[in-house]
Length: 281
Image (cartoon, rainbow, N blue to C red):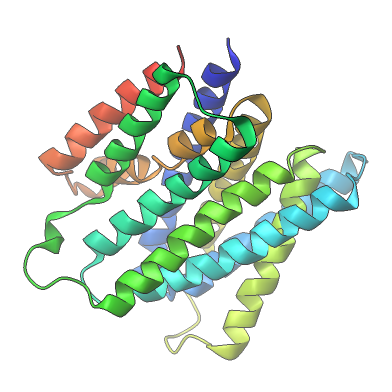
C-alpha cells in the first residue's frame, strides 16, 4: 500500500474510534458533567498507558518527542473545554461545523508548507473530505436564531486548538508511540485538573465513571491510530480522514439510540467514503 493509502487507512481507524469515544462521552454527559466524564477517561487511560510502558520496559523517546506530545495533550484538553463552553452557548450545528472544518484545515495548511503541495488526486480527495466534514456536522438546528458571536469565536478557537494538537502529535511522532501517548495524556490530565480546580462542576459528582472509562480508552486508541497514520504518510491526509470522526458518532447514535441521521449527513458519509477511497489510490 502506498503512503497516502496507509495514512488514509489508519486515519479511518482513528476516526472510527474517536467517533465511538465521542458517543460514549456524549451519553455520559447526559447524566453527569462533561468535564468529569472527560477527566475520568483521561486519568484512567494515563494509568493504563503507564502500566503498559513500564511493564514492557519500552525505551523512552527523546525529550523532543515527549515535550511536543505533552504540549499536544495539554492544549488539546484546553481546546476541548473551550469547545464544550461554545456548544453550551446556543444552537450547536454551526459552531460544531466551524470547529470540525478548522480542525481539518489547520493541519492541511501546515502540511502544504512541510510536505509540499499534494498531487491533484490527493488534493481532490482532501477537498471532498472537507466537504464531507461540513455535511456531516452541519445540522438543521441552525435554522432560525443562530449561535451568538461569542460561541462562534470560541468554536473557532477550539477548532484551531484541535488542529494544532494534530500538528503537535505529528511533530512528536518520531519515537515510541505508547510513551508519546502517555506524555500526551499526562499533559491532558494536567489541563483538566486545572479546569476542575478553577471551575468545578456544580452538578453531583457521580454517574460518570463507566462512560468516562469507555470514552478515554477509545480516545486513546484513536490518537494512537492517528499518530501512526502521520508516521506512514502525509499529515493532511491523516488529519482530514481522522476529522471524519463525527460520522462514527452519528452511526452509533442511530444504531443504539435510534437517533437517525439527516439526509445531509447521509450524503456527507457517502462523500466521506468516496474521499477515503480516492486518498487510498
